[in-house]
Amino acid sequence: MSDLLKAREWYKELKVEKTLKALRKNGFEALYASTKEEAVSKVLDLVAPGAVVGLGGSVTLREMGVPDLLRSRGHEVADHWEAGRRGASGDEVMEIRRRQINSDVFFSSATAVTEKGELINIDGGGQRVAAMIFGPKKVVVVAGINKIVGDLDEGLKRVRNVAAPMNAKRLNRKTPCAVTGVCSDCDSEDRICGATTIIQRKLRNTDTTIILVGEKLGY
Image (tube, rainbow, N blue to C red; front, side, top):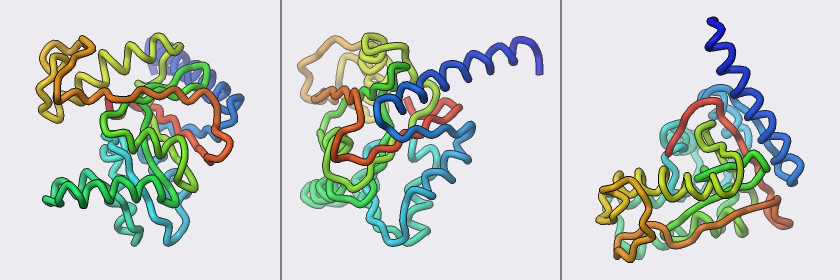
């Protein structure tokens, strides 16, 4: 390994360790996986046989192949993305979203994770951030190293000017950010930013595990 690669790896490890330490100080169970394959193994270990699993709208989890792996193990998976792809009605999709909030295990990513141990998320429909706060028996948040930011200010900038524009573009939304790549706090009917949440500490009634992955995943 070259000196440059060693320096990069050293810096990444420092950043990850600082974030893990802060997350644990804030009451979360915090785990690290160096690769997405290792992360998948940790994810599956957290799901008991027969558990009903809710999936938030997460590109990260789908990049890792988590939905299909859970289905192959026989779990009922409340996945509104999959329902929408197969042509489910609006009412059916809403029912699946509600089941996510009452699932045994709810999986999501985070839009940003600060080095101070805070989770920042932005949502258009609301059920994802709602489920991360209260409802499921267990919440598991999986985030690539690209989601780690220094503090809340940096995290909110990332939410608005990195994650949201790319997500709007993926969804073919008619928003200014899908054209410019920059948030303009728009009034578009297609706006995907309806609620921004900051989870500063583990919530009293929500068992939450954070898995940081040493790869770039999602937005």
